[in-house]
Image (cartoon, rainbow, N blue to C red):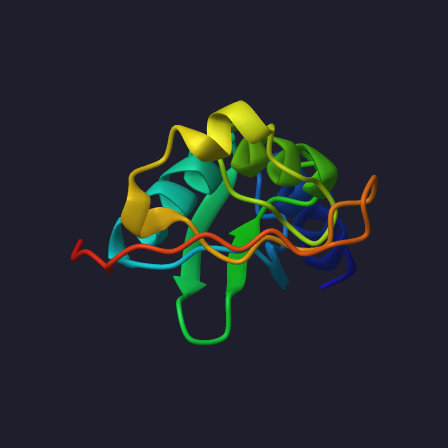
Length: 125
């Protein structure tokens, strides 16, 4: 029995049975196209298993391998796609390049201290 316990405790990590973690953080968006873009950006990071963005709460939930994924990197990839997160602000040029329906009220600009509001009709996925 001791041999079995030793072998299983030794072999499981070698076989890649690591426990996935979940993280949830704010990602700004406005519509179904935003949802598709945000989730696609998050899932493009190697070892992000799943991504689900909720338009109503503006929260993204990801499941990932904590040994391989740096959450700060996920924030940066999403910002490169044009969406601000609670840690990283998208480049203004990238944000402005989004379709009009994807423009959302951006969080406070750290330089001016003012919110940047954009509008447009919403679109579908």
